[in-house]
Image: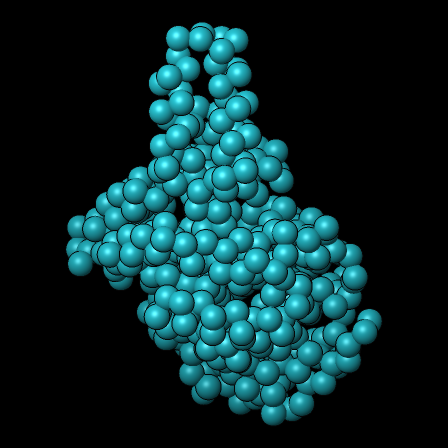
Length: 438
C-alpha cells in the first residue's frame, strides 16, 4: 500500500460527529448518541479497530436487521442504562464515502478507473442498495424508539436530477462524411428512390447528436411539473482537447448558439472536467478558469468526463478550482450506489478523515452502463433502473440520471430515448406530494 493513514483524535471526533449528524439528521443530538464506548449517552456506537488499522471488510459479514455490517458485529446490548451498538456504522460509512478501498489495489481499467466489479459493494452484493442510507434509517428508528421521539419514514425521493454530459454536441465533419457515405450506400442498395430524402436528413445540421431541443422540451416539462425544489436540469460542458478522448466546441459559432440555448432554457451549467484532467489533477484548476472565462458563468458544478475519478485525493483539486458540487460518483461498468448512499455528502479525505467542503451528489444511473457495460436489453435495463429508484425512494434519497445527447437522438437503432422517458416517468411517480409542488 503506497499511502499511509493518519487519523488524529481531533479529526476522528469531527468525522464521527459529522457522520452521525449526516445519518441522523433531525434525530442527532450529542446528548442522545455518541461514537465511543465511554460516552454517557443513552445510545452508543462501539468502535471497531478499523481506524487503528484500516483494512478491507472480512470475508463473512455479520448481518443486522437485514443489513451487512462492514466493520464491527451485529450485537446490541443494554448495559448500565446504555444501548451499545457493536455495528461500527462510522467506520463503515467512512470506508464507503472516502473510497479508501481504492488504496488497497492498483487494479484499474483501460481508462484508469477503479471498476465497480472490483468494489466491496459489488462483491458482497449490495451495489444496488444505498447501504449507508439503510444504516441511517435504522439509527433514526432506534434513537427515536429508545429516546421517546416520534419517527416518520421517508415518503419518496427527495430530488430528481436530470443531467447530460455534452461530450460531442454534433458529429465532427470527418465523421459526418463517413456516416453520410455509409448510409447513402446502404440506401442505394435497399431503395435508390429514397436517397434524396436521406440526404436532406443527413445534411440537416441539427440531426446528428444535436438532440438538445428534444431534451430541453422533455426535461422542462418535468421541471414545470415538479418545481425547482424537487427537480434540476444540469448540462456539463467539455472545454478541452488535451487528449484524443476530449473535445472542444464552445469556441465555434455553433457552440456559442448551443450555450445560449441552454442558458435561455434556465438549465444549470457545469464543468465537464476532461479525461486528461482526470488523469492529471493539476489540469483541473486552469481548465475551470478557462471555461469560466469563455462562458462568463461561475460554473460551480462538475462531472468528470468518462467518470474518470482516478484518485480519491483528486477531489481536493475541485475545491481549489472553486467547485462546490460534484456529480461524478458512480462506476462506469455497473450502475449502482458507488458511495453506498443516494444522498449528498461532503468529501472525506481517505487518509486522514478530514471533512472537506465539496458536496458529492451520487450518480444513480448512466445510460451506457446499462447496455455497453452490463449488456442489458431494454426490458432488463428498465427493471434494473426501477430497482435503483425504488431503493433511493425508500430512504428519501436523490435520483440522479445521466443520459448523453448522443444517446437521445431517437434513431430506430437506439432505444435509449424511450428508456429515458420511461425511467423519468417512473422517478417522477416516486416524488412525494406532487400536487403541492411550486
